Image 1 (cartoon, one colour):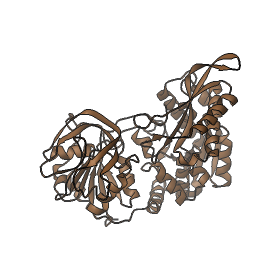
Image 2: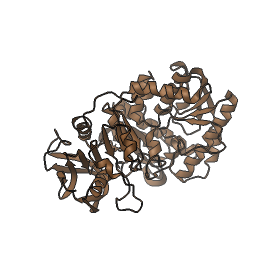
Image 3: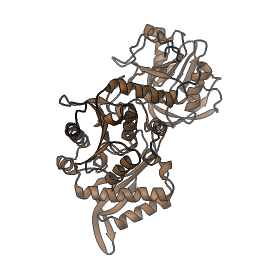
Image 4: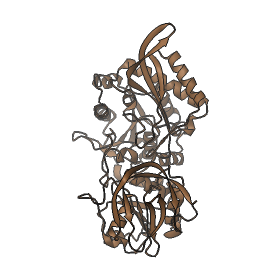
Length: 512
């Protein structure tokens, strides 16, 4: 609808660009993401309430670094620059940007240094999340520095022209006051009203799916997790029984998962589901493979083969539905901007030329918390919605080194114990994701009077809002003690348990 208020986000390739969009939508404002090359006239035609310049991996001085049409900073609408966006504002308007004496990643304390519309209502000292290598050394003429960390410029603004910038990332959960900063820009500065909601997304998505699939038929790759289940439910609402769901036992699922999930889909959700037992073919393809990227690609290729076969068996399917989310996309391929590739993912990056099915990804622009909200709109059972994220390649990327039935058995048993103890301690729903990693090393131990040389497992548990950033969960020591004691006592072949205390960034949540 042409009268809808719109914010435009220019994507300079930052890992958090879509997270900015999610936060804007969470605050009830509609937004669109555009490439950095979009010119003034194209943006003006959208009649934006405001413009947001994202972060990005480049230095503003790099050859080929993305730039903007200078007229976008002419005062026609408020502008907020974030990280690279701040530096680009400074460069375009006559300030000076230079490499930092030290790169900043993670939590930083900053101090307000002048009155600010953008920082209105916030405390004098703020905790923020940094991820950058360059600094603004001198602000452009007419700008006021409104926050610093020591001598470093962390926020600046020219309220007269409506141009604002921050060096940190207000869009991530680990900037506690970031939501208020964005709210100040959207409402206090830009004057936006509330109007975007997940209910409006449902109606628009259903209409788009019906238009895409038309009178055709679709199959959906179910994994038992939140993403694929919500995607299937949404497509089912659009096309009904013309959707056939395929749930594959690839031999890489958690203990008892195939049977439990099949029963849930059929008895509670009334989806049309075909169960496929294919563990042997997946594990055979993975024999001797230790490289994580090869594992992912092998598993992805085998999934495609299975779905092609099942599509032929189930009738004339034309479309393959996948529950791909934006974090999968932004960490796998450059979507709109020059974003850095972190890892491949079997759900994204394109289908092979031989693939006969067209791809439908109705959740591609959403983050995990939005998908859970969408699932509640669609009445998906909480038993599904509360589940922790599970990687597309399954336990293969938690079994570091070669994937064998024996090693998977150890991993399943240790993972079950970890999750059982988290649930018993009422911690499961407070944690974004928890799992066990089987390491490709052995350690010396003593059991009884005998020396042992057995497996090491790592416990991984993180807190997060969206999966783009994450911090390690502060699980009480007594809970960790119970988990470790049970694993060593109950799982043959494990004599050492360690706990991963790495945050994202610099680490990823999964180990592979």
